[in-house]
Image (cartoon, rainbow, N blue to C red; front, side, top):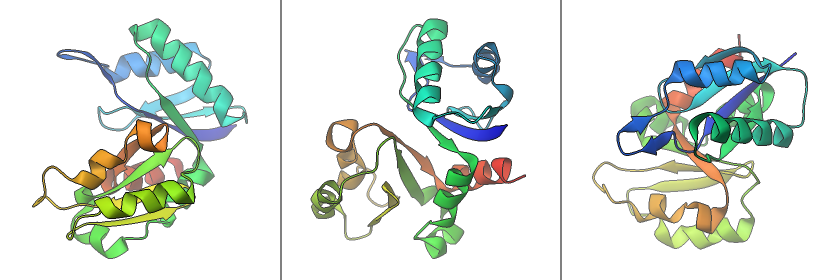
Length: 179
């Protein structure tokens, strides 16, 4: 069995309606996924399954989600070892230790091309940092700039399918899969 991390892009089903984590776990179990567990109520799922191509798991989860909850949601899946590599590759360890909620990674379905990363550089504010690592985009943002141009620029339209998680979530998911 292989451990996987699944990240849901958005679990808001409509005004005032969010996915309940027990329902998400039940959906995973209905697919035959073993030991599903969630982290916070923002669409982070860890589970075990036979070694399978992540794109197959993504498609299965997305189809089941749409059938169960009536809405399509993009889901990014990573193997546990790939998640641990992502967490270990955090290029901003000092900032993460001080303000973990201000360091985030946009986890991508497909690696972000170098030209897309270069196109983001003009959006980096004077109090922000950005670095691509392994095809994902790491960002340090500031609360002093509540409407960050950089965060807005890291959209699906510009970069492709991805979803962001802050350092607290990345670290806690790494702890869950590293056991």
